[in-house]
Image 1: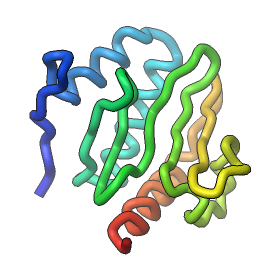
Image 2: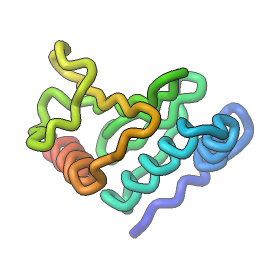
Image 3: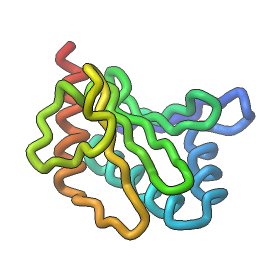
Length: 132
């Protein structure tokens, strides 16, 4: 069964509404990229739960955090909570490679997202969360 998040955040909206607003506020390539990433995450895991943490960071979870969607001036960063434990045969991870736990994907303006590889990575993160 698909979970629809209706939980209200301390800022007064549902988590989904807060993420929608963040995407709208960005109104440039970063908003488009974050919206695309969000859609791919939902396609890869229809049971994903959206959360809003750390004063404005979208977080996607399923039996634990899958990844975050941080936005900076020149990058949209997907940080996978247990990325160091995931196989990455497509080489998507390109940031935070030295840590023992996390791994990240930095997405820059104009870069194409390997959608199939990203969905595979998201499914692997869900499987890892579900196995522990």
